[in-house]
Image (cartoon, rainbow, N blue to C red):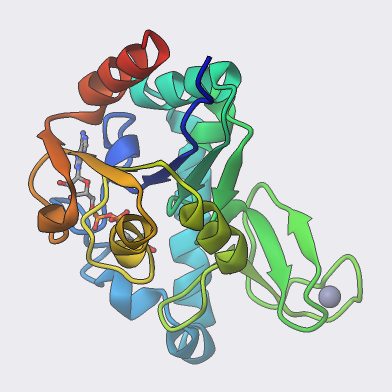
Length: 233
Ligand code: APR
Ligand code: ZN
């Protein structure tokens, strides 16, 4: 019996597209004329907290209208069944992976349903609106912000991600444009450490050339197919 390969999976907005959540760089990716790069920055939060909080309030409220799709469900099935190491690293701030049942999951860009205290650093589960200057339940400072990694901030749990990439046998990237670092660099890191690399995306991404193999199509078809294949090996 051979040991099962260690797998790291990176997901992006494309995996939630078929659930009805607009991707960032596709059609509908603009929000009231603002590019995401102009809203999701520490500078924007300082200059216009109402705007930034409203952006995330709308996205958090929108979670009630969406559900996991076949791709989220297939990854949750793999997570349950896979006896080797597995880590799903998502850039998404929605909760569709966990609603599908995935547990070996890490939100590298934060999560809509968490609030972060800019004063004491406490994190709180959050639903409903989060207006600027909401007091922190831990320390009382009026400093809660959405627990989202903004442009210019360092993504969460990079040490854990790099450790997983370092001993991955297979790296799979799903539904991400490869435009935003450091996630866009994971394929090269995984390759350098010796992993096989596979991309599942609607169209060729900026990083397609770095993958051993790219399969093009909707995640709702490609991901269940791939999971079926790897579980029946
Ligand atoms: N199935 C598979 N892939 C899809 C689908 C689909 N149904 N629909 C779109 N895609 C692909 C697009 O072709 C594109 O390559 O998903 C990718 C989405 O790219 P982006 O909108 O750039 O999203 P993402 O890569 O997740 O963005 C990275 O940028 O704004 C920040 O922090 C935000 O985490 C986000 C990061
Ligand atoms: Zn606090």
